[in-house]
Amino acid sequence: MAEELDRVAPVIDELGRRFADAGHELALVGGPVRDAMLGRHHNDLDFTTSARPEETERLLKAWAGSTWDMGRAFGTIGCRRGEWQVEVTTYRSEHYDPDSRKPSVDFGDTLEGDLGRRDFTVNAMAVRLPGREVEDPYGGVVDLAHRVLRTPGRPEDSFSDDPLRMMRAARFAAQLGFTVDEGVRRAMTEMAGRISIISAERVRDELVKLVCAPYPRLGLTLLVETGLAELVLPELPALKLERDEHHRHKDVYEHTLTVLEQAIDLEHRLGGAPDFVSRFAALMHDVGKPRTRRFLDDGSVTFHHHDVVGAKITRKRMKALRFSNDETDAVCRLVELHLRFHGYGSGEWTDSAVRRYVRDAGDQLERLHVLTRADCTTRNQRKASRLARTYDELEERIDRLSEEEELAAIRPDLDGNAIMEILGIGPGREVGQAYQHLLELRMDRGPMSPEDAREALLAWWHER
Ligand code: ATP
Ligand code: MG
Image: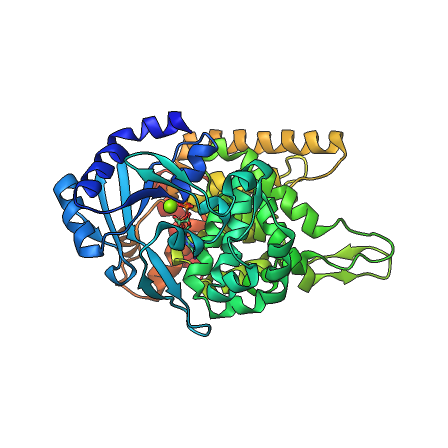
């Protein structure tokens, strides 16, 4: 703790003195205090103060040069100096209107009052500055030691004040690897429905943090067990298909959580940082299964087209959660393509099929490699390593073809102008058809010389 405070000393000592000299209280609070006690770095420094926002703004401006307003109504002023991102919020004592999305804020006068309205005890600790006295009125240190999330007051009151805190419980469980207190779990289960008053954007932001955390399984399991998932991501609990008595297929829900973890283990291929698109695609890849499951007379089970159906379901969910079009397109493309490799057999694809795989994956190719490899949860070691080897081979073929042909930028060998010139026609539908035909040829055969392309074009034209 002391070590981490020494690391941030250039900021906290300096700011503490300036606020004290101006007659105000200032304390480091929330995430940075919690993480300092866990011995972790935290570069966003959150403070709470008795100063009113105008006064905070004046003091921060003198220290950092410029500030920004995070919403003066909420009393938060931000600034940056060097590597440090600083946010200072005026003490609050809040009253929530139980049916409104937005807390109505009253500024408070005491640190203890401010801490009492925070979400969890481990986030309700502060270090007064400049003296560095620790304030922990709700037993946050003990809860940190037990690795448990508890609310400072009754969880029912806390979640009634701000239902988003239920999502935050799952998010912190996933980030910190903590469990939630029994009372918190009970309140989440009873009050799950209240999440509906929170905007989709705020729910989404917590979900993204949860999915990108080190232990997403913990957070997701909590959402499913309390019934919150039923409201924010119903596709996930829907994967808990009732098992038919013959156990003709694996448990899709368990499989999905394992695929997510295996995709995380492969993230070094994507640069190493948590990759939301890859993780969310892993989570959603089989959501088409419940709707496409058929039991055949011969005792087998099928999920025909669950890839296409799954992509549609995923698109709908991501739209409802207000994800950007780019993120939605990327995830849906992965869901739609996650099965394609299973047609590869033991290497039966033609070069043309490999080219199509690359073209259809587009800029998601590396993530598709990750997802497809992660999507193997068989306990049969021989089968698993056979699949991995076959995928190695496919990647080698892609590399070879790419080198030869710059696969990613596949275009037909003639452009529109050349087509019009060779055929002696003007712009119109036929040019598009000719272009498409040449693109297909290009896919099937690889690159052609200009003469061959010209010949092929004329042959097609005369055959029409
Ligand atoms: P990180 O910044 O890593 O996401 P954090 O703990 O700093 O984690 P923030 O969301 O930045 O979390 O919030 C800062 C602090 O403000 C929290 O530690 C908590 O004390 C308080 N807080 C934030 N949101 C709420 C909320 N909805 N209800 C109660 N307290 C909250
Ligand atoms: Mg923070």
